[in-house]
Image (tube, rainbow, N blue to C red; front, side, top):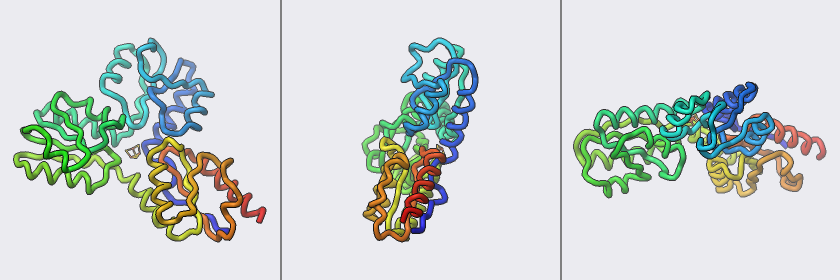
Length: 280
Ligand code: F3S
């Protein structure tokens, strides 16, 4: 059986960078922790824990040591608290998320009413919003723009994982309201590219394996996309879950992985598939 691995399977640039920074910080002999789990991978979180890097929900009980900021960022107030407590800060916020935070801060200071296109419950969005002063609104779609109160000049920024079409629908709704509209396209295409590759791969194979945390939204979405095309799609977290019976009558297998899946887990899955191949 032929096994094909998607080119962009696994860590995006920002997650790779954040994980590297966390593992580097783990080597130092200070008390070190991450503010919230560094990424949505229980395997990475456990590995860091073994190296002495714990996870804290907030900074209330912390008075010294090193704090690592996760790739999708934290609230401006949490960053301030870390500095006030003179903690050593390893800021692993993805530079693309950081840009969105900076644009909101700038727009807000320059007197714009700010619209953040995204999911209000997502920590990345909450972090981005926190960099603005008053009059920062989160909208999930263009329709919601109609319900907003009267606004002056409008500034628009997007959650990095938003689709271009959704950003466009919000901008169009803003333009319809009239007046000045200033837009920063802060979408990162890593997710869209990974999904596109998975779509193309699922069309060519008899079975798809999607690797990633069961709690990772982007991995679950990848699995959904693949299942729609290839019903023989299996979402797994580790190589140990692979069952030989999945591959009966299968000639080609496609493999992809979510943004928070470390390379070592992908390698283990590829090795396991090799073993399955050799045992046939
Ligand atoms: Fe950054 Fe894009 Fe990844 S915003 S964390 S590179 S999905």
